[in-house]
Length: 62
Image 1 (cartoon, helix red, strand yellow):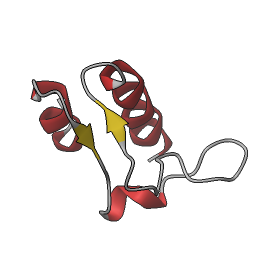
Image 2 (tube, helix red, strand yellow; image 1 turned 60 degrees about the horizontal axis):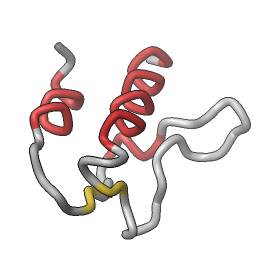
Image 3 (cartoon, helix red, strand yellow; image 1 turned 90 degrees about the horizontal axis):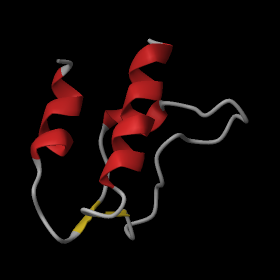
């Protein structure tokens, strides 16, 4: 398993997870950033699967 994916995959929390690290340079196909740059982040556990999908997209670009 790729290291940036391990921590979010193992998190079992009911809070928001934000990203302000070097993974934020990953771009989406439309040219925007793959991850939200908002401190609103991603609500866990509701958006966990969505976030893991975004991480997979970012990893596959490298």
